[in-house]
Length: 95
Image (cartoon, rainbow, N blue to C red):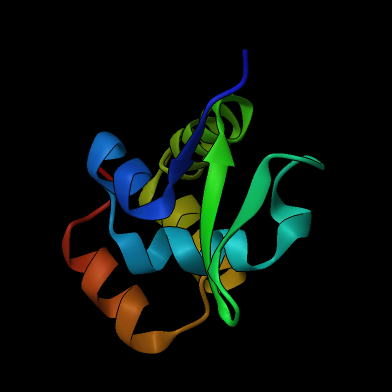
């Protein structure tokens, strides 16, 4: 059985910044095919969700990026791009 979790739930579960995660998964090439799901909630409304495998991939990606301050900084620049989000996330350090 495959489960999907909304990005808001994934952020809470992983203790991560929601906007940072949304920026990462906005490019569906960042995770394997089928890991990112769009759930339509109305005619022009949709939520992004991740499968169990997508959550694991994202966790692994973040763990790898946090190997050092430099890899974390490079990761944020490459995968997030929004200066306000990067500044906020960098304040928390690479953990």
